[in-house]
Image (cartoon, rainbow, N blue to C red; front, top):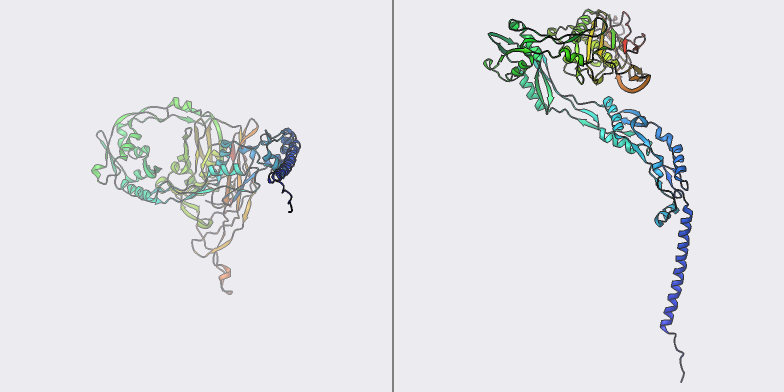
Length: 623
């Protein structure tokens, strides 16, 4: 009988296998621990190995060393202008002026020393962290910078307006605009600064008028009713009638709460019945200033008795919606009329010196003398209190014969001159705005001519169109601003009186760019008036504010002029039969405006803000 050997005990085999497994695991663990300790040791006391900021390696450096490295490597990039794109225009922003900065120390702060976190150690081993730079943003300063860009770039919506021709109201519809999304632009520039070298596209929003077309139509209907009949004014035993033409002159509509709300100028209403009520009134007088000595001297105010213009306007407004004559009656009371500006108030306004003065020259023409002179007469003596906005259209009134205007040359469609009422008034717009420019007053709405006219300084001129666009600026000072005018046959001078805030305000112009050639057109009609062509171009004018010999602020105005064609009277030779006699130019009663560039030097303001435009050549002529 054979005896089989005993099989190894199952438990002993399992035990040996377990010991081998534990041995292997122990060896692996010891290796991992050794590797971990090696990585910890390798991490050193500086920044983690492989650390970089925008591709600049700073691993292993102390925080102080890394700060110096980043300032040297990224400092120039942090100071480089930021390129932004608004619509089709490319601009640059200086980071230091816009509240943008790079904090190298904060970027690496707290990152030095040995690393014990295995996850961080593994990341270092695989290449190290790429840190985002710490950017500082003063949102208030950046917001002001973006607001300045918006002031130049925005094409704001045009609100519908009611404009009267005589006593006939007409509706000028509103149009949509495009405006910079300023909050989103601040965020876009902040996010892209230093991180991206690509231009930053600033978002633009469509801006509809606040007044709908339905609300504008309702205002037009109310305007028709308002001027449908006179308003009778009863003052004691005296009866007077405000005619529809005076109501139309006094009546304006202002956007408010999504509607066009009517406003009445009580002074215009009262002036229309001044002769009828003269027997029951004792006129007063506002305080004003005598500037004949070259320094403003206050002329005291005086109280009066009569019909209060403001009360008259309030009462008349309540009956303008009536259509029947018996309901269009107001009873005015005679009372004390306090001056709008007392002597004490005039003293507080601080109108004590000449702030700026500007003279614009022009070739003599009877229509210019009348239209520019009439506008100057309306403007002369205008007082702007602190915060008040000057409106040229409102001040010089609609250009009608009743308001003292005649027909003259204006810039028509396509840059071709034509005749219309008020031609030449743009000279007053240019002169007043330039004086306001050198006085440092805040630009609200200015628009240059569509084409360049040689006697004006390119980019520093303005024009207006009744019921379409205006020339407006705000008295952004703490003192009053008195505007006076001096009219001559070939020049207009506008002077601003108040209190100076700056030692000097200079104008600096960029070179002309985006030059566009003009074309030649032929006009075979008796009304043809030849004119010289002028290139189109874009130009920047900077307003530089100087105080204590240092530049404290700079503002930019960008103007783009369209080309103005050469107009030749007669038949285009290219269209005439070869044997046809040439067509002689049509004759016209007056020479058309020439838009050839002037060779006269650009006006240069003195340190007092006074400037004079160059006199044009005798042959120059324009609207």
